[in-house]
Length: 321
Image (cartoon, rainbow, N blue to C red; front, side, top):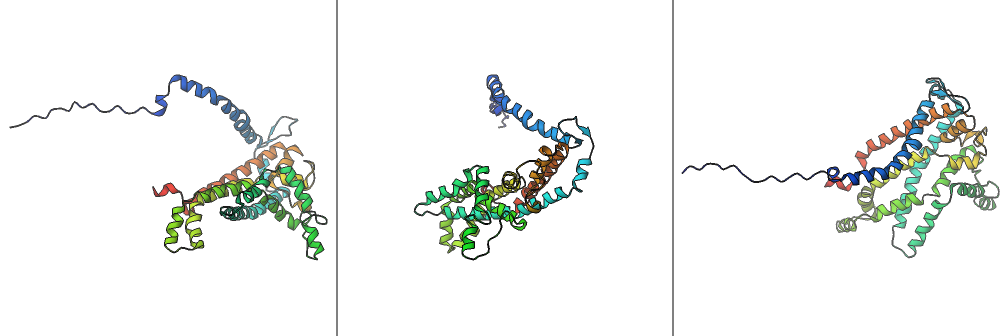
């Protein structure tokens, strides 16, 4: 007996509406109302000035008179400006010394702070406290502490007959001194590393111990890979911040924006410090804007290179899922 196929009368399920389709007009309206202040603040106080500085970088502008178009003259002048070249050298030297020192020191301290010993909360608090000290107060304290004659660091060395560096007066010691001062305030970085180290699953260490792994093997094969994403994050932050050093150098070596030098032999003439001097000391705002955009492009390129390199050494837990 031949049967005839009967068309199916089953009703297909209605596709679930997307998130924005489920929102009512009232929810959408009030959502836009609440974000308007933030959007206006971004447009007028961030994005607007950024575009204005880009336009001013092609002009000669001293705040008093109207901007005068000069094209690429400001950018061409940079490569012939000895002080600009000096500021680049000083900044690169600081970046090359500070970034690896900060990462290694903060990670090592976080490893120590991750241990469960008596009074560990007190130690963690002591390491974090310097990071909340205001920058100006911190610079003043270290200017006294690093005094070559009567500072509490050099005086005991001189009493014992040991060589005492002239920290802030010797051009060869100024950058190491500033790096040392910056390392004093690593509390936030240590705290982030500590959270990532404590967040590693104990089951991974237990499995490694079953396989006979020692402390170094567990650190190299478990702790480092599992916290590599946080290391990468801190690397990005430290690179960006180290290119923008200003406050400590200004307090220690500059008393006025138009000061003629920044330490002996301009050894503390950081890039942003020289940019600030051009903008608010010499009122060469067009030239300072061009310096700002060069710095922006350099930081963007370095950030892109670091993001490109992360594929070879950064591990994310979601990669194996």
